[in-house]
Length: 297
Ligand code: NAP
Image (cartoon, rainbow, N blue to C red; front, top):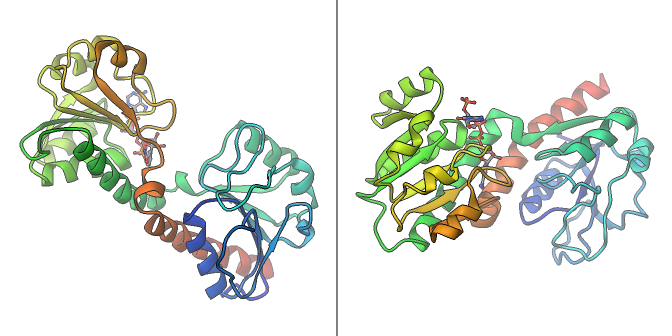
């Protein structure tokens, strides 16, 4: 239980609603910043403007998945208020106050460091990334269906990268009957792809394996689907790039060649915000209870 713990939820989208529900169930005191247009009222949660909130009482601050932008602004779909997280606000919090975010950026890193607070990036945890790969794959299937006129079953699918997302994508497309080849650079990944019953190839050979690809799904967050690779693809190939912005595809060249290439960020929040929110809420409940218990000792 989080009875006596004061948590600020600062901005966010539908995923935050599951987190707020969890905080309420665990009896935390909750301040909602950037939620004034949210119709639902939660007992035990108070909606406040950023200028009204008393940061000296906050034991934890929960930011949206993106954290902040490069200027410190926090996204919120439930408010028109401009919410900026600053070093001045963080300094007002108690020293033990922990900030939770999906990911970070140089701005957030710098105010965390200068205010000497602790930042937990939920998406760098393996458990969150693996759970999150489930709605990511479902969103990828949705995009493949929406943007092709052929079935996934029987199609030639290339998956680039065998990380937490790549493995789930490769396995699921193979279960749907696609002929899946997976590109990786590590020998242990090549071995794992073979063990999964899929066809491995080394990323150095990418150019030579794309000649009959129907759908190319990239999960590698560096430029791998380069112009020389796209030049060898059939004209009907669909590229779905799941890697974080700016993706790993030469989108300019794909457009020039008339190949459909889609950057598809934040699929969990789009196709399954409730599940994506529950994934975060489950992990956060464990982390907050642990922090709170340790803080009291
Ligand atoms: P991950 O577990 O770290 O996997 C990344 C993969 O990329 C690994 O196979 C890694 O191989 C490979 N890789 C990295 N740098 C490389 C390089 N320079 N050359 C060749 N291969 C390289 O990450 P993840 O959790 O699967 O996430 C993958 C990407 O998807 C991230 O950018 C993440 O932000 C994004 N993502 C997007 C969505 C969405 O909705 N679109 C959802 C979740 C995650 P090595 O082990 O050899 O480095």
